[in-house]
Image 1 (tube, one colour):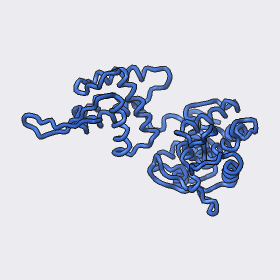
Image 2 (cartoon, rainbow, N blue to C red):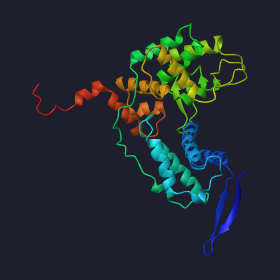
Image 3 (tube, rainbow, N blue to C red):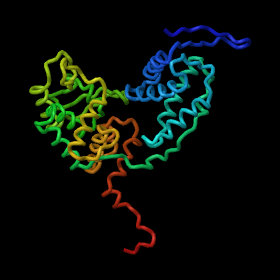
Image 4 (tube, helix red, strand yellow):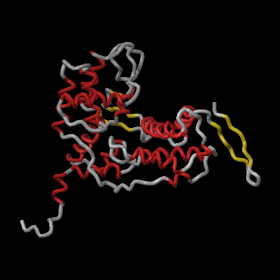
Length: 321
C-alpha cells in the first residue's frame, strides 16, 4: 500500500512525499496516474509501462526503488542500451515513457521537478517518412484468405478484417465493439472513443453488415457478453486486448504471402485512409472517419496518393523531356 507522509524542510512549506515499497506497486500507481490524470488509452499506458518496467528491472531489480538516489546518468544508461537495440529503429517512445515517469514522481514529491529535461531527444522531421500501407489487391487477398472455410473462425475473422479495411477502425475499437453499438435499421456503427476520447458514427457498409450478421448468427458462441467478437475457446470471452486482432491479421498476411510489418491491423486502417483519399474524399471527412483530432494526422496520407502528387510535381532541373 502506498504510504504518505509530510516532510517539512527547515525553511520551506510542507511537501507531500510518497513511499512506494516495490516496483510493481509503483507501476500500478503510475498506470492509474496515466489513465486518470493524463487520459491515456490502455494501449499507450501499456507501452509506457513496458519501458518503465525495463528501466526498473535494470536499475533496482528486486529491491524497492530508491528514488532519492535516482540520477540522470541512470536514466541515460538505460536509454543508451534501449536505443542501441537492433530489434527496432531508434524511437522516442522510451524517452517519452521515462519523461512521463519523472513527471509523475515530481508530482508525488519523490524527485525534484525538471529532471525530465535532462533526457535527450531524437529529432524527427514531421512527415519525413512514408506510412506503411497495403495495396487494394493485398487487402482483397487478406479478406479472401480469412474467409476460406478451411481456416479457423472464418466468419469472425472475415467480419474483423472488413471492419478494419472498410471503416478504418482501430484494433482496440474492434475489440470493444458491442452488440448495442450497431444500429442495423439506421445503418450506423457507433464507435465509443477510446484513444481520442471522442465518439463517432460510421456507416454500416453492406458487405460489413452481412459479415457481422453471418458471424453473429452462425458462428458466435452463445454468451451473456454483449461484446460482438469472442474468443473461440470455452468459456467464450471477449478478447483481452487489441493484440489479438493484430495476430489474426498477421496470420492472414503469412498465409496470403503479404509482407508482414509492424502494426499489422493498423496497416488496414492506413489502406482505408488511402483508398478514401484516392476517391477524392476530403481530409476533413477522412479525419472524421478515422477519429483524428488534428488534420495534421490525416495529412500524412497525401504522400501515398502518388497519382495526385505526380500532377503537381515540379520538373527535375535540366530535364527537357
